[in-house]
Length: 210
Ligand code: 0O2
Image (cartoon, rainbow, N blue to C red; front, side):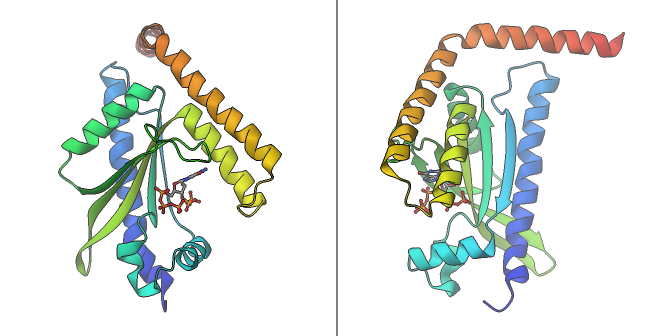
């Protein structure tokens, strides 16, 4: 690849634009005092070293990165409850600013590692001085519990270069089960939690007005 900055520029633009759009949705829910299915949104462009490592691991020729590597641009939408993930997925299905090309439900079908998350790959058009360019963006939708587990597991994987010792792997699987149970328990008191958050939000508004 002769110029990574040029290649990655539309991906950066896609991440910036989608972050703004999804954060705005969260703000709109908050303004209307409704429960927001979006707790927070993050995004990143895959670092060049990770792109090269993944391309080598998956045998992807560098001139086919734009069609064969789906997560060069990544957006993460983190929710409070598992049911919020369904709401977000439905919302994304309704949008007309991108085309969904693939969906992977690692919540119904968790990975062997214990990883749970909903992945949606979309074809997103960015408008540049050279015209319209479509890029693939991977949107990961997960709960805070799923995110906590994935973040920890990701750093351990990094530390052990993908070869996590068996004892730690076992503990991670236990932790994945605990995160699953946490999501289940929270779902059972979802109504209570939402009501409490609604009251808190109303009080905050009152404090601002007085
Ligand atoms: P990053 O940016 O460091 O997070 P593969 O890369 O082979 O696992 P594939 O087929 O490209 O997977 O697509 P997949 O699994 O739908 O998405 C890959 C991304 O999902 C990973 O990106 C992670 O962000 C996340 N992910 C998938 N499996 C796991 C897992 O077992 N543990 C954790 N912590 N995250 C996972 P990268 O490439 O790791 O990059």
